[in-house]
Amino acid sequence: MRDFASCLSQSAVQVAHSSSSCGQNMVQCAYLSSLRGKPCRVTVTWSKVAMGQALAIAIHDCSNRCLCKTEVKPWLFSKRKGSKVMELDGGNAEVIWDLSSAKFAAGPEPLEGFHVTLVCDLEVVIALGDLHKEADHGVLLDAPHSDAVMIARKEYIYAKKVYSAKARFLDIGQLHHITIECDTIGVRDPSLEIRIDKKKVLQVKRLSWNFRGNQTIYVDGLPVEVLWDVHGWLFGSSNGSAVFLFQSGQSMQKLLLRTCSQNEKEAQAHRFGFTLILNAWKIE
Image 1 (cartoon, rainbow, N blue to C red):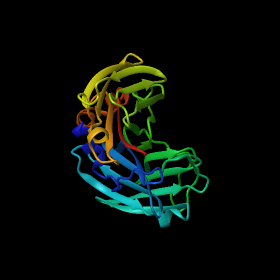
Image 2: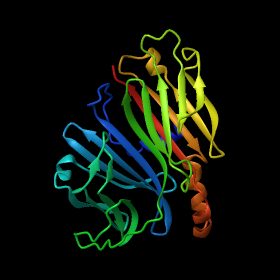
Image 3: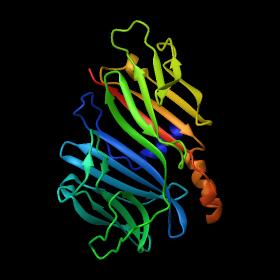
């Protein structure tokens, strides 16, 4: 678990722990992409803070060296549209965003009506969202294209008893609904239950003894390793959190190293696994 968590936290926005549904939260996604013909990892972090919403983007190479990073502050988002330049070895990278028509749910990540694009040397490194059009600031983004693949996602979620998330365990696979149910308040013998698309795939009884563990489940015939740590729920403070990890395929570090050693044709033919990390807080 430490391997994946550390990979995702390299460029994370600092988020204060809170037991309130109105508290700060964060969604962080890691993408495997290419920069100047070489594989790289792009980390995109959406966060909700007291002053509004913020966006952070970082680029790391195969050796996990940070090439550049930047944060779009909430007051810049008040314009809902703009760009920001990052210094990169031998040149610049530019982040261009348009949130003027963005639609949000409960979390900090927009669902639709937006675009965020990262450009280097007029090459699109990553393009997110459903609005692709010509952008201002002298960069032409007419129908931008990127081969970036999401390989990991980390979420901060809040609930009383039932926690929900979505994941695609293969980059071309089906989107699955994950439900985690655990009632620890006033329960003598709490248990943990995890469902995928409403089907129970894991149940942990005697949770007071089995508060940490792992088990392999199968989704669409694909083995998915599930790890859980609910010590914070059972023995921590009232605002303690639990951590859940769903992992298919290889670790992010091994995946990047293997991709670096492959030629472009072999890398494109490879199907990528996925890692989902959930930090879950209980609401009183």
